[in-house]
Image (cartoon, rainbow, N blue to C red; front, side, top):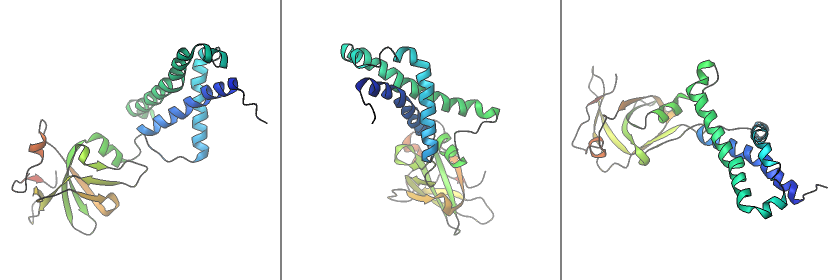
Length: 222
């Protein structure tokens, strides 16, 4: 049988928790579906790295006597070793991959162009060309709009829908807002392609969200 005495449980917490925190933190930055084998391997690897870095601090304190005699000190050590350091390590690793390491041939942590589009363009007008030939336009702005990131199915919700002005021989234009619009939702797989247009810099929300009588006069092609 396992000998679950307090000292071993405390040491186990110090040895395993950092890997769990690091893996979960990295998943927040770069979501991806993992099988159980890879997930366990990542947790163990992260835990070993963290434990190897902090073993000199953990070993003398990972016992019941120290925890009971110095509860606040034990809490601080646990917070640093098991939460702050692994979360910071995972965050640093993500941004190192994003900013520099991908230039050396390592895979970029942003998995798809769709994810890149949503992360890099916080506010934009979208003109969606649907596979059935229809076109739909809208404004992606702030917390009232949403786009899914991998590994979930790619879709987008724009909080205001606009009319699309089509003139033969000319680029499509985004017209005025649809009256009483609450937005629209579309799946990326239902689109042939999606065109994005910048919201003018220094635009406030009222300027970016004209009413139905105003036209944005945004061309549908560059």
